[in-house]
Image (cartoon, rainbow, N blue to C red):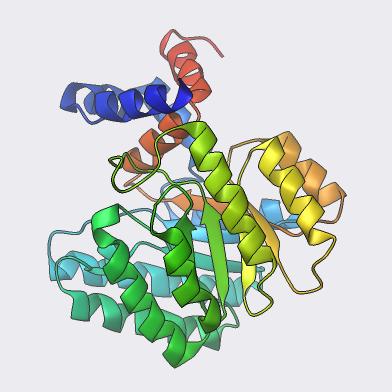
Length: 305
């Protein structure tokens, strides 16, 4: 039922009147600030510093995707270069997460590849890494191909994979030998049955199987991106037999008490911290992933806290 509700939420939030209601009202912006650190790099760095003080590491994501021209793609690259410079200046244990369509993938793949190279070089200079986010299924193969080349050239990248995709096991067979870190998440896009499994139980089973594969792969660093008690408990049991690095990853604004429990138990935890003005697509995916968040929005809309 929850997976059907999630797809319904995505369908509804794609409608222009709904988008206007959420983006142009105080309640909508209040919900966004639960999940988004702010609209500026300064705001994001302040949140990052608070999280680091609480014992976490951070991945900064300057929100945006599917640019429409080269100039926009180049501005996105420059924004990330500035973010990397601030990470270097601050000394915070942070990296960046990027969507390749924000760097021009799908518009000019060569430009996206060049920009990814530049980000990897700057990240290496400040002593950190770049995570390539996964997007809709139509971009999966291109994303992996661009990542493969950049990782071979630079060696300081990682990539996200989505457990619900039928192809992910085969993708991991390609990606694991490249080293780096691999973020395993469930999947945040509405995909058809021929591309991805549809029920929550099927997604959980796929996640568990792929997690076991990653945790038994010493050449790569698993990043366990889940907020489910069952997935986290499974990871803890697998960690007992792993001597190589790993980390949990969770989203800013989601399950704060669980985040604190993991840190208190000395598990490495990285918080994914998005920021920027292009927050709407990110917010709607968070609402769809956890439909209980819709109640938070409706209560804000009604003027309640």
